[in-house]
Amino acid sequence: MTTSLSPRTHGIDAAPSSALGPIPFARLVRVEWAKATDTRAARWLLALVALSTAGVMLVPVLAPTSFDQTYASYLGVAAVGVAILLPVVAILLLTGEWSQRSVMTTFTQEPRRIRVLNAKLVVSMVLGGGGAVFGGVVTAAGLGLASASGRALEANLTVGAITGYMLFVLLNVLAGVALGALLQSSATAIAACFALPAAFALLGTASTLVSDWIDMNTTWNWVLENDWAGHVPQISFSIVFWVGVPLAAGFVRTTRRDVT
Image (cartoon, rainbow, N blue to C red; front, side, top):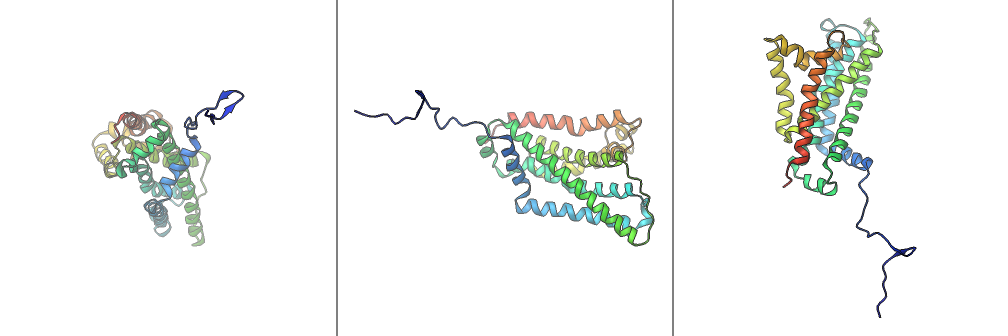
C-alpha cells in the first residue's frame, strides 16, 4: 500500500510549485537599473557624463564674454552638457541585450516583453531625472565660481525655466530610448543619435519647415528657453517625430522580433 505525500489544504490539492506568479514590476525595474549602472562600461559612461557636464560648465565661467551671465544661461549650458552623453546610456540599456545576446534569457524569465520595455523606460527616466539634478548641482558650482571671481550675475531663474530645463534633458533621453528600441543595435543607434540631429540641423539651414518643425536643435531649445508662445504645435510635432513614432515602432518591433 502506498501513501500519497501530496500536500493538501482543507481537502483541496495545493497548487503545484511551478505555478508561480508574475515577476513584480518593481523587481524588473531593479534588474534594469543594475544593467544600466552596475557594469564597468556603464560606470565609465556615467563618469564621462559627469565630466562632460562639468567641463562644459567651465566655458561660461572662463569665457564670460561668450555667454549671458545669468542663472538661466548657466543652467542651459548644464542641460547641453548632460544631454551630450546621457542619451547614449539609455540607448545601451535598450540595445545592450540584443548586442550581448542576453535577450533570450531576459524574455524567457519575463515573456511579456512589454513589461521589460516599460521597466527600461522607467529606468531611463530615472537616469534622466538624476542627470538633470546633477546638472543643477554643477550649475550651482559654476555660479559659485563666477560669483567668487567678482562677477555680477542676473538671478533670473523661474519655475518655467527650471521646468523647461528638466523637460529638455528628459526629451533627449527619451529620444535615445526611442532610437535604441527601434534600431536594436548599439553602434547604429549611437551613430544615429549624433548624425540625425546634425543632418536635420543642416537641412534646417535651407528649409524653414525643417528648422521650425523637425530640427530638435530649434524646437527643443524653445523648451529649454521656456519659449512656448507660438511654438507649441512645432514642439509637439518634433516630440512626436523624435520620440513618439520611433518609440512606438520600436516597441512593436521588440514584441514581434524573433529571439535567436
